[in-house]
Image (cartoon, helix red, strand yellow):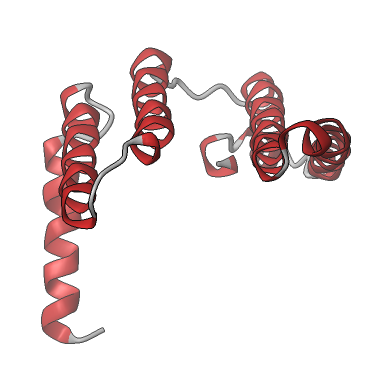
Length: 141
């Protein structure tokens, strides 16, 4: 997700990246030692997610100080929360394969619609992406 935090590169302070990533790695290892004995594989996944969240937070905090980029945090957080809730809740459902497939497809449509409705992706941007894909499919490249 560092592409959304270009300030470190723009300010030519890329030496900070090693420190950020090392801090994330240390946190990840520590959380693995704490969480795996209690939660097993879920603990490992949770430790990794929290480690990467810390790295992303540090990237954003430092990057924004060096080169401010406006982000629309409320809709971003709402969509991330919606995606997290779906990713947590949907696997818990006891469904047959065909129903699960349909529910997962519906979840993708709901999330994509939410992203568009909250303005995180503009319809013109989506149309441009579709046109690029169509052009590449036609030319075979």
